[in-house]
Structures are given as structure tokens and as C-alpha cells.
Length: 421
Image (cartoon, rainbow, N blue to C red; front, top):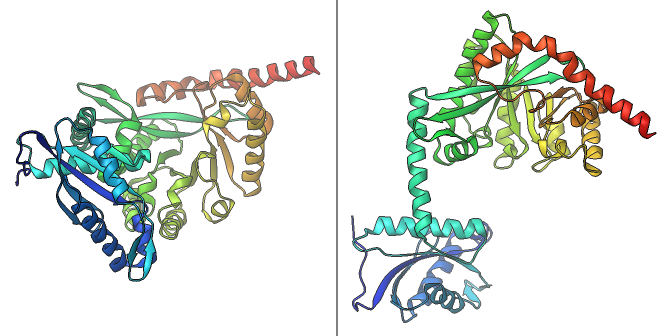
């Protein structure tokens, strides 16, 4: 592995900066690959004229620059000076471009190899893009977070392989009868040393690393096995599994999934988010139709939190719409949210969909949703997600609590409305 080239004077330090043209991919599609590459080459030539520049070359994606900065100099200010130098129009093949750039930079450590330095600069550039900043410089805490993510990634791979994950189930309740209608499967990771790791920490990581396919396969297999155990105990309930939007447009997703369903004895459904259609709507819709044609029920999860589209609602082969909990949490206190929730319920019913309200965490929200005609309810007020053994206990005793749980809130609400009127 090559080492970082060191500046000759001892009073200087080596810095690697990666320069990226903002919206470069869109620009490349507009002007063509040759013209876009020409822009990078011109930028590299401009940077090479700077006094502190030791090397500059245009790549397919960005300009890679090695700088020799004085020890006492402010690196951020040096990079700002570089950005100003790059300003002004650039002429390529008769087209004039006024460009803006983003930079990610890292100062070389002693005895650091080039691959490590490049990785730190690249992660800084990614942070600049995420935060929409012009310049980002590698920080010690970034490397600590990166190392932590690597450990988490390896741990997750072992957890999937060694069957160390768990499924918890949150009941979905019929709004009228209080009986359990279905179960939502939620993956949990009880790490041997770190304890329970929140799903938002490892699911996003699995999507980035490609482990989401294996994770989802594990969840589906476990849900099928648990459903079989429930059937033997006399509980025939559909189980819904969350499917990552990253997988929906995967060409092999539909058929790989259907192969798993040869062992299904009950009903397994999928919940997808609205944003699952964004990356490749044509492929995603094709996959979803294949799955729906095979008899797998589809639901739109977290409706209202993404890019709600009536066009998608009409096209998608879904039979259930789940209203995002942020709207449900403000039902009893907000003024606009009840109107939005009620209109969403009416719209879904007009499209022949059932409606589930997520995040029902208070008796007031429960009662209002019953009045609005919501079909299914889900939330902490009714039941938290439960491991399998506690789920069985819940199912065997829920009949005694169902009437009280759903009848009392609406009765109390009606009494308050009468008194207020």
C-alpha cells in the first residue's frame, strides 16, 4: 500500500482534498460524458496553479488534490481560497459553465497509507453533501463513528448468520370489536455486549452495506416459523413484515421472496413505505404486482410522512393504508390533523382500502379514530411490541380486556361532547 507523499519542509503538512461539482451526475446526463470529464480536467488545471498544490488530477467523479499547507495555516480558509480560485466561467466545446464545488479534505497522519487518507477525505466529502456544506474536513469524531459503524456492520452480519436476532410482534386491533386482526413483525437485536440496539441504528446500515437482503430473508423465515407455532396454539393471525424500499426495485426481489413463501401455512403480508417507489418506479411497480398476484397482501406504511401521491395510490396493488403516527399523536391537540386523518380515511375507503392508524398512544386518539371510521388500530395504548412468549400470553387473555379497552374511551368521549354541547 503506497504511503502519503510528505511535503519537503518540516513546517508543512500534507492534506488530501476531493473536489466535486455540485449536481455533477445531472450535468453529465445533460452535456454528455466527454464534456463533463473536460470540466474536471479544467478544474484540475486551475487547482494545479495554486502555490500550495503538489498534485491535481481529474477523476471520473471529482478532482483529487494534494496540498502542502503551512503548519500554522487555517485549513478551512485555505480551502475557501481554493474554491474562490475555481470560480468564474469555464468554456468546454463552446459551452460556458458557471459551477459550484464541494470539498472533502483530510490531513495526513504520520505513517498513514494513501488508501486510509483517501477514505477519510471521501467520507468528509459525503458529509459535505449530506449537510449541504461547501467544505467538510475530517474530524477525530468522524473516524470514531466510522470505526463504530464497522464494528456494528460485522456484528450484524454475525447476528444474521448465527440467528442472534429476535422478532417482536405488535398487535393490530379491529377498531369496532377490539379483537386482534393481525401482527406486525419488528426485528430486534439484543447485542451480547451492547444490549438492545435500536432498529434505526442497524437497519439503515444494512441498507447501505447490502445486508438488508439477508436481514429481510431472516425476518421472513422467522415470521413464517412463528406463525406456524401460533397456528398450533390455535391463533390464526396474519403477520405483516416491513420491506425496505431499497429492495423493492431489485430485479430478483419478487421471485426470491416467492421462493420463501412455499413454507407459509397462514397469511404473510408486506408493508412498504411511500418512498419505496422513488428510485425505479417502473421496476418497483412490476415487482409489487408480481407479489400481489401471488396472493401476498400489501400495505403502505407511514402514509403521509413521505411524498404522498394519488397517482401512486391508484396504481399500487395495495389493500391497506397505514397513517403515520405523527398525525395520530396530534389528533387530540391539533386542529388540522383531525381533518387530514379523516379525509385520508375517506380517501382510502373510496379506493377500497382498509385503514390502520399507527401510534395510538392515548384513549382520546383511540376514541376519535373510532368515530372517524378507522378500521384498525395499533399503538402503545393497546399493546407494545411483544416477544413471542409474551405475545402468546396477550392473545390468550386479550378477550377479557377487548371490550373495556375500546368501548370505554368512545363512551367517555361521547359523554364529554354531550356536556360540552
